[in-house]
Length: 276
Image (cartoon, rainbow, N blue to C red; front, side):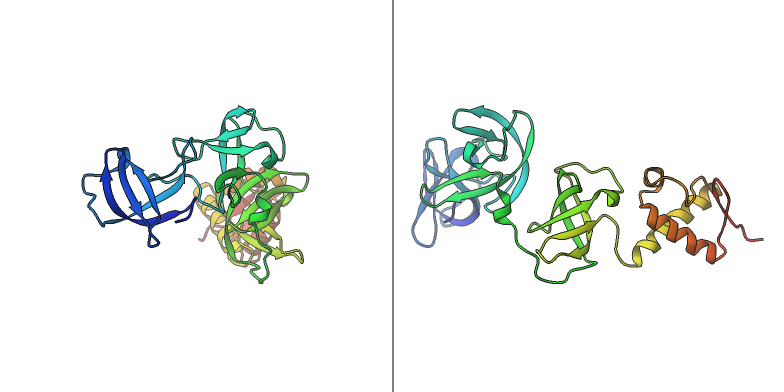
């Protein structure tokens, strides 16, 4: 059985403290009584998370932690102690992030990006902020593909992200077209795979699909209101607030609509051309 992961184990015997479970090699672990269901039977296989309790004894639980071994999530600090910070990872016993695994001073009730690690020498699980060791270089061309994003911290260039739980990426400041905060999980699109294996990310589709979506949104507003008080001179912030798209996408979309004779352009607004 492996600490930090969901293990499928067989119920070997019931005792007053709970049930003892065994793996295929005969290793056993206690499932405390509070997790037992009346339907459990001897020899039944169940899925449990295996970790160590506050006395460093191997135990199991049917509860699911916020993250498994090798994964990372934003976790809230519950306590700062002389040995490090404890974070809430969804179990009764909080997870220790030793000072040696912290990138900067942590504060209670704040959330930070934490990875779940395993120390083979001490046979213990611990939390770490050094999550780059868990990430991979992207070695395939996934330009234009849709990816799942974990929003991380802001920096001078924009916002750092983790794509598909394994690649490091960046949304440049001028491509941030919606309100996002660290810990958010959203979809994005790969604009470029860099030589170092990191990704440039956008929040809107990279292909022509994004213009179809943008045109549909603009036409929907015009069909409702007749006019839209945005032009190619409007600020990026104003366009983003009204339509949730970049100024570049907006300008190219209204250019197409004008070419198709769907709208007329005015100094302060665009207007839908109504069919006679």
